[in-house]
Each structure stands twice: as structure tokens, then as C-alpha cells.
Length: 473
Image (cartoon, rainbow, N blue to C red; front, side, top):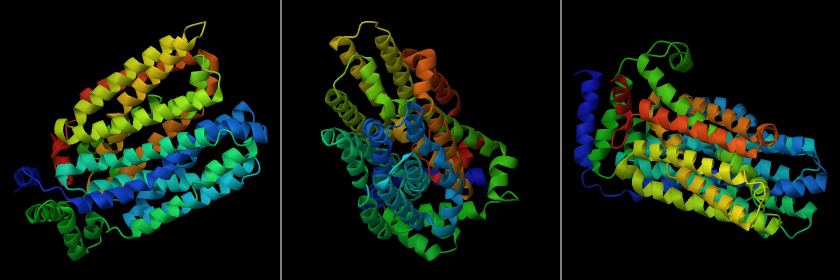
């Protein structure tokens, strides 16, 4: 039997098993613990949007220094992202997540004690190491341990917890806004010291990824994990056969990076284009411009009171988090592709509306309300597709032998693009105006819609080991 025929046969068996699945709560608990590591990631990303107001006042930083401090984290992450695949394959997914939490704790402590611009940049670097590891390895672990029947829903938990962290960051900004400037931002970051310690303890209680165990020749342990994380015993056997078949298939000569970048097959090239494209468009569409600089946007639209601006950012965070639950409800029912198409289209429309709102010369309460509504529409559209599904889709389509490194490469593109957006927004707004920035992001989102339509096949209901057969067609 050929590899493609075996893949199709496995898919047929899986679909038969999954007709009336018994939802596996143990897999849900494992994915929840892994995903919770990203709460601190979201908290740190959003916290700077309000903390920068107090840091600027306390330390006397310039606009350029604030812009670099806010966006540098995405560039710093490359140090861990590019090695995260190697680390995850060497140490395992679980131990790598523990290491990520250790860096997050150290970074939060250093940030809260920072006494100057250089110290804060160094603290951001330490935090970025942990964030990079978590952002790459958590989606890989989630995809590998989830049963096919609920892989979309469970993988979406990652973005839910990132957004819970973002919401907590906004809430912290608002709740501590009345404290003296020299205390407010330090307490905001000190709050992030303890949670990673507790999460590291929780991660140690999780099982290792069954696919990593099989990759290490530990088939008995892999079988035990699959029995606990599958919906039925029959499904566990099918998944194990699937993994073994992947290892038995002929492998390309050379290292992982040679197969991934230097001499990729046509199938791997198609997969790589999808992974890199999704991660690029997720960030190039301007999400971090909103997460980091929404106070500046609302101020431009006519809101002047700090409490009102920070309150509006909290409302945006609530909407963003709520609409990820919508994505969770739909992803395994309607599929990845329709949600990504709707998301890209919604982002283009909402950013066009925001840009037109900001073009109003005389601001008023009506223009401020319209800008807040446009931003809410943007985060709602982003959160039903590109937000939760970019990492999910990228992790599930990569072949097992390339998954960790491929996820790292995709995340490297993601963070580079994010860094370019976040470190250039203030300067770009001064050059082409703030409405011009959002017209630009709307154009990128429209291009993303075309990319999804032309390049991304549907993956709902397929086993991870069947993805190569899908992209070989």
C-alpha cells in the first residue's frame, strides 16, 4: 500500500471512529495547562500600552525610546524562537515549557526593579526568551496531544489564554492608574512574577507529547498517553498506527533544516508557504498596533481623559476574548478555511471604517465612539479567525519530523513582522498619518483574504499524519 493510500485509509477509519466521539476531558486538561503558559505572554504584550504612560513620566523616556521598548520584545524573541524547535526536540515539549516559565518569572522581576532604559531593555530581553519558547512549543504540544475530533477547539485555547492575559494587562493598567507614576508601572510588572512559577508546577503534572515519545522510541509510553488523550480506545490504536507509519515512511536525506529550507520537496514547500504566509498576515494586518497603541488611537479620535482611554482598552480586551469563544464553537463545525476568510474580510472592512473615522478633522464624542466601535469590530473579526487559527493551522499541517522547527520558523516570521509593525507605528503615523496606517493595514488584510482563498486547503477532521497527503494533491 502506498503512503497516500495508507493515509486515506487512516482518515476513513478516523472519521468512522469520530462520528459520535466521547469528549476527552484529560486531553482538555493537558491542553489547558500548556496554553495557560501564554497568559503571561499576553499580559506582558498588553501591559506596555498603559505602562508606557507611567514609565515615560517616571523615567523621562523619549518617543523613540518608548517605541523601541514596546516593540523590541518581538525582535528579542528571535533568540529563543529560532532554537525552540531544537530545544523542544531535545528536552521534550513539557520541559521546554517549564524553562519558558522560568524566564518569564525572571523577566517580570527584572522589569519591576528596572531603574533605567538600559535595564528595562535587558529585562524585556529575558522576558522575550520565555515568550518565544511558549509561543512556539505550546501550539505544537496542543496539536500533538489533542484528538482529531476536538483539535481545533483545544488548539484555540492557546489564543484564549493569550487574550485573557491581554485583558488582565489592560485591567491592571486601569486599576493602578491612580497610583503615583513611579509605583504604578512597577507594581503592574511585579504582578507577573508569581503566576509562571505556579504554571511551571502545573506543567510538570502533564504527560509528554505522544509523538515526541514515539520519536524517541518510547512507544509504550506513547501508547499510554494516547489511551488517556483519545476519545475511544479504537481511536488511540489508529493514532498510534498513524504515528508509526510516519516513521516507517521514507525520509529525505540530510538535516531537518535542509529538508525544510535548503532542499524542500514540493509538498513541504507548499506547507511552508502556508505556514509563513499565515504568520506574516496575522501580524502585518496590524493587531499589535491596536494592542500596544490603542490609547494613542483613542486620543487621536477625541478621547482625552486617561481613565476613559484605559477603560476603552479594557472593553476592547473583553470583546477580543469573547469572540475567541465564538471561534472555538465554530472551528470544528465549519472548519478553518471559512473562519480565516471571514476574519480577513472583517479586518479589512473594520480598519477601513476606523481610518475614515480618524479622518474627521473636528473630533467629538461621536467620533470617539465610532473609533472605539471600529476597533471593537476589528478585534472581533480578528479573534474569530486569524487570532486563534494561525498557530493552530500552522502546527497541524507540518510533518512530525519538521513540526517543531517549522513552527519555530513560522513564529520567527510572525515576531519579525510584529516587531516591524509595533516599532514603526508612531513613526509611520507621523509620515503617512494615522488614518493612512489603518488604510495600509486594511489593504494587507484584503491581500490575506486572497491568500487564504488560493493557498489554504481545509484540514478539519484529518489526522496530523495525513496532512502531507493533503498537500501532495
